[in-house]
Length: 255
Image (cartoon, rainbow, N blue to C red; front, side):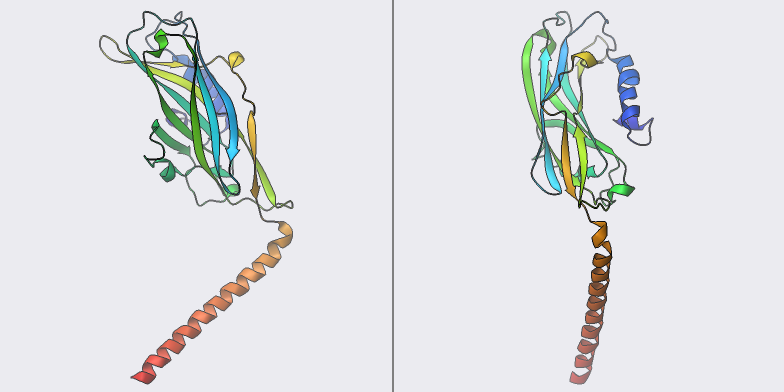
């Protein structure tokens, strides 16, 4: 995601998909012959939301499979699975919360890219994405793997939604983008190789997208709420002024 935001100011699906298909795929395997087909398959087995209200968790189950067409002559290598979860408008992940090493020690690295201003309401914010780096092990391309699963649990928070007559705003979260990066020991320096499942071989999960129904204010109640808020604030201010004057008068009379 860092390289994406070096070329684009904000996250748009069309721009990101073009980046993945052309700019990223143009350097899938640096230093490795193209005819060494590994048969790496990454798929989402399950995608769901856990919890209620404005603070929920996105649960993802990722499966990694290594086909029979492995690379027997490949030097020693260390691989990691990279999962990029794009988030829609109105939903964000707290980067400070994700940096907690006790909760996320299973990941090699985790970062939030895009709009990380947590205070902005939905209509003033831009989209963001979370990138996970998961240790897949060493020399895994030497052997056939029928399926290794990684489970991700991403805490998400809803922004303040625009007013809606229904009292709710619905946002949809799609499947993450996935690839595997392997560092290959070379004679002079390490070489990096990226593997992505071909688009026609990607396996859809039981839920390709999940919908989040987020509470939002109703336009019909906006005027009433504004009046109540103004009256409450005014009474609170008058109470503070009265208490200050009364306390000052009490101190003067005692002296």
